[in-house]
Length: 272
Image 1 (cartoon, rainbow, N blue to C red):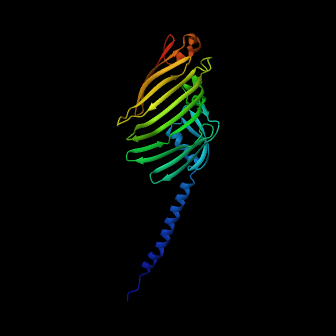
Image 2: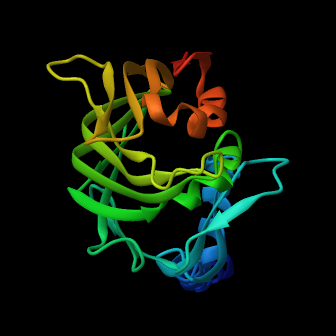
Image 3: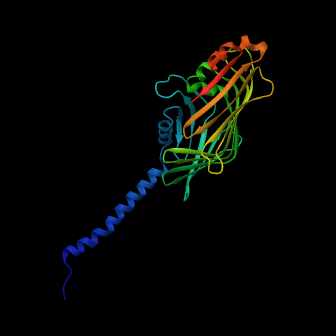
């Protein structure tokens, strides 16, 4: 009868240790992933937004944490603005992607629920219907022209059936985003407020990938804003006008000069 060689015994003895090392490394990797610090998420957000959206003083983990939401002008900018309270998040993995809940007590009555799902050639981001209110001075941190306008007032943001789909580097929007600027004012005018306005972005329907943009004035306002345009991919084409009430031209003159090409009591707005 042939006796097993010493090499065979050595191989058998080493095999359990190899599995043990593999299991230990896998466990270590999962532990690192589950305890990934919130600063990793903050770094990713800053890089993706080219520094315009920042999560300052991050605490907790990638999966459950909080930070101070800061808007900045991007690389080279020296100005920034921050929310008065911290932004909190929870992220949970799922078979179909990632579920996230975002909450800012200063501005949101209910957490914003987001579902991210990767697919071939890109990813899809779906948001639950939501309503939130944000301080307009926050926009000044984004740099020109907001740092010149120094807006004041309240921004009421709502979404309905909103889905963003990135495919081969191109974004397609479905659903609707509505932004209402309530009782707006600016340091360029002595009028407080100048008026209230609504900007509506509506996604394409029935296979149409072009989104429409509509600007309108709410109620009686000293400054009337109106316009429309289209958003295709990452490119916006918009045309509109800003018109001062006859008895408010002098008080709105500086603002009209900044808004667009001036023609008396009117300024033409053109983007793209």
